[in-house]
Image (cartoon, rainbow, N blue to C red; front, side, top):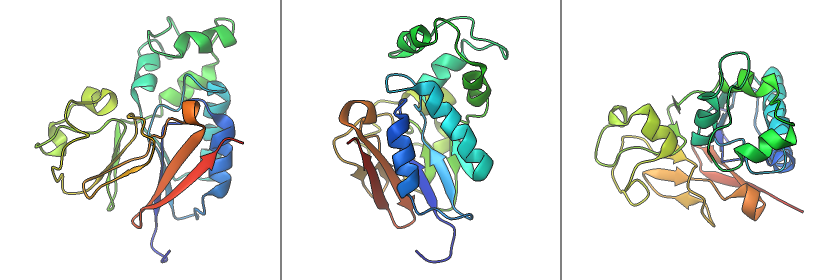
Length: 209
């Protein structure tokens, strides 16, 4: 890689903290590089709270971390009042997480959720959890659509001006197209967590032993 700053985008972790740590140890990121987590870091997998605490610790040592808000984060955030969770969202994996913590979800999750953002942009790409409206400028896509998805995005060849790097849609292999890059490889199910480096589009993958 040249000396210019690079961006590493990390696909949907879904609580797979062991894979996350394995991937982070593998990525050759430098102080000037940015790490963008594409959302859906929680629910379903090995340990969502340990995942969140790992991400919080990572940002202490590497401040150039961006945590995007996926639909799973959005669902939990709707139940957060700033001090505690008042309900459990009706989304896959949420009840298992609450049962794991005997109904008392740690404050760390809410604290981290408040830090998530709907989108990120740099000179290389747009980074959005679930994509954008085909055939329209990026700003025409609502925040809700960017987190939960829109029909036709995966099939679209529309040029948004920069490629969109996204997760949300599990695929057997990373999707590398001129206008978009999809890196959700279903880590909680497949045991494969994927990252991509921009601008050179190098793929990195951690695999469950």
